[in-house]
Image (spheres, rainbow, N blue to C red):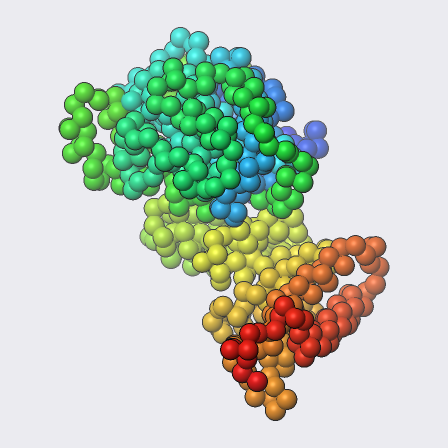
Length: 585
């Protein structure tokens, strides 16, 4: 769909995919604004039950207007393509932030809790329960706002419609964060959201959820039976008042929890923590977080469902004969939204004349063949088909080829000078886990090219520094391939930097020194100087020089720093001098 126009919306690029929908970044032409454009998956659009629920629950969520809730703009259908247009939030979701930073600082945690509780308070005032509060659905915007997303699971608690769970699958929330009453199939109300927010709070403060397991069933049983370990046993420095608050949110009995989001807001104000503007992270840009990202998909509940249905389900559930609701709930986990039989709105009109015909890509026998076909066709649609036909949660090979496909899409956007989209896809690689260093290196190199071509010299320098750190960890073939990807002037800078670094690691006779014999503090000093160089460039006024002039400026500054570092290595400061016992001179 990328590049196509659906009615008032121009589809720009894909952001992600969930259980029921695929999400694109789009421009609403009439209002000249960016939106997140959710499209119901074609295979689900054939089911009238899915379609009715998709529209009706989105319409209910659209009634929630609050600064801490992702706003739904429009729900509709064009030529059988059912969509939701909603607020686009540039930034990261909380899950991505935790993955990059291990945990969240105390002040930032309180900022997040205050804003999420404000969103839940507004929802409860309108009789709406979210039902799927989790880090992936908490957005951290670049302007300091927290927004709760995906009220697609929301239920109007006063509604009179009921779900026939024997006929359709239901999602009762994500296993890691669902409340005990959700696990039992009991009545769900705003206190269930309080519990899920408590699990989320535990996760962001300690770096891990209170309960974990290999299957959805094992996690659900822990939510019902086990007490979480005290937060301070995992992380020191958490205020007693904050720990007590989180543990109260995690009470098994809803009657023992904080009863209302408004009460939670009041208690948060009593916690003795100083919060400043500096507590909001300044590195949130560039990550699209409306949907579960490629990295998030590896822990998707669908995978847990598959394991559950193949292993423990029957054995454990027979042992729990008094818990038939638990069996029904767990077995029916899917990664879509809650389904029901509500009347379909006749106000949604289909207008085939407003949609451009969408070409289809045929499915191949396996993921390798699909990727090979995409490489031959070499279009974004073909590369996206790899992940569409072979979901990343099904097999590690699927994840590998999907990541390769996203790398190729980034290269396509770079070649066509669509720098914003290229940056977004390279950033996806950049934010992968550290062990995926070869993909991260591709992402870093791609970002360096983007910033080079858009004259963002400070960010370009930052990426070159990071590339210098990552390259030595890769094998020579991958190093060569990444170097070849760099723009010519950047490649020359990195090559000269590597050559100078090699010269600095030799003695007067040109003999390589061992790591222990390197001048004390040399590496750390080098990178400190390079970081200072990057900051210096960010403070310069707009540079009007030619590309060659900028390159010469960079090289001159590298030479100045390297000279300084050589001098420092020959005359180390007192704190850099090694103890006599390890001095090899």
